[in-house]
Length: 147
Image 1 (spheres, one colour):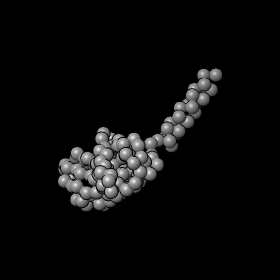
Image 2 (cartoon, one colour):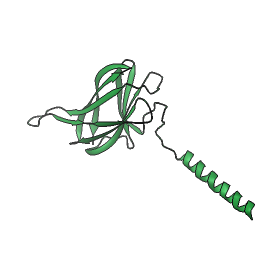
Image 3 (tube, helix red, strand yellow):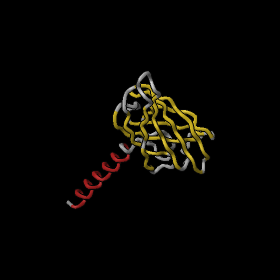
Image 4 (cartoon, helix red, strand yellow):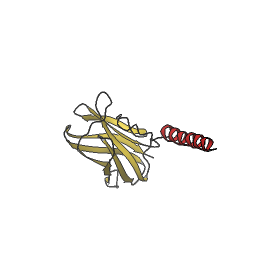
């Protein structure tokens, strides 16, 4: 009887491990691949590419989380040191310019930053990104559309 219980317990443990491995995070940690679906991507200077992504691949009006990832030409994540992102919508008619600054926390992957932002309205925005660190210094923008 003890062997049967031990055997069943081993199968259950194997099932849990297999499930956890198969359903693990889709963030490709360490690979440099964007975490989730790409919202926008563009050249970041210093032979780097910056990618903004989230689970849906869409920037939306309102509060949301996203990931900003810096990669080199081979797709490997590159730690850029400190990074900042401000979503800017140009003034239109009587509406003044709008800015929505993102806050970041680090992730387990160098070069990948988890961000939070509150986008005020749907429309065309510029993701104004700056960074400074061992990979150099850069300032650039990527056009994005909030839905």
